[in-house]
Image (cartoon, rainbow, N blue to C red; front, side, top):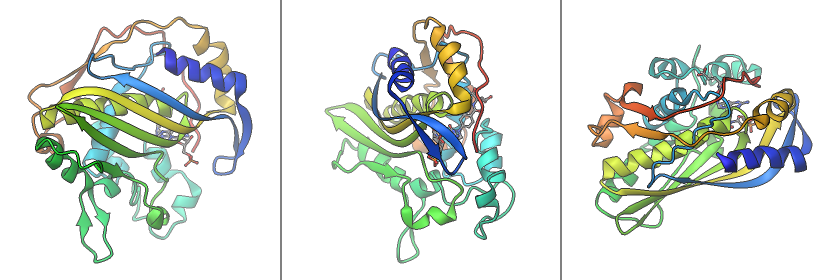
Length: 283
Ligand SMILES: Nc1nc(=O)c2c([nH]1)NC[C@@H]1CN(c3ccc(C(=O)N[C@@H](CCC(=O)O)C(=O)O)cc3)CN21
Ligand SMILES: O=c1ccn([C@H]2C[C@H](O)[C@@H](COP(=O)(O)O)O2)c(=O)[nH]1
């Protein structure tokens, strides 16, 4: 929690105003942030200085793991986070590759589960990683990347958290996640939950102990219409101790994640937080 608040404060103290063409808004911006989460001691990095909708963050990530390409499928799982990008962005609405309402195109999980090869076949990056880790193999390339510049025009948004690398040291599993762009008040709050949960889940289904998760961010920003709420409300509050994430121990395989798992299989213990803050969202 301290590292999140320190990043927010750093943006306010040292950030530079940058005009963002895609959204037409200015962003107070810093470059480079490194966050670390202690998954081995179950220190769930949930924001406590406002109410966090952590279930939607896990639902969104479960959708990526399943390779979803449609905002309706995300809604069914419990995340409304893709509605605006799939249905309200003028550039995507005018894109001839958009298949209709709620289509997101070839973004995120589609690349993770079905990367297109030149011969027309598809490559499942995540299944390869699960298979290797389950056998105790780390080939120093246990990488899932959503970043496919050759297909950017086939999707509604370039991935923000774009690459996840797993590493094994003995029977302890580590994760390093890379993010090119972070909306610190809204998106980062979700992304922290996702990095933590991804390592915890992968350790559970591959039979490894979870270690640390490293979250590396390049462009970290606060949009101009979010600044006042962050500076004058959220940063004035005292944080509470971190809660713990409880995952249903019956989740044992990759197929479990792909089929029956829902948000009911995740619980947070000991979450104390200040009241919610509604930050503006930019499409
Ligand atoms: N400008 C922007 N920021 C983002 O964080 C973001 C995008 N765009 N586009 C793609 C995804 C969608 N994500 C989102 C979208 C919405 C919320 C959001 O509205 N969160 C609210 C309420 C969530 C709820 O009620 O479930 C929050 O207070 O956290 C968060 C992340 C993250 N990403
Ligand atoms: O997981 C996510 C997804 C998106 N974001 C934020 C970061 C930016 O504010 C926008 C994306 O805009 P770009 O112009 O493509 O950078 O969404 C996030 O923080 N986390």
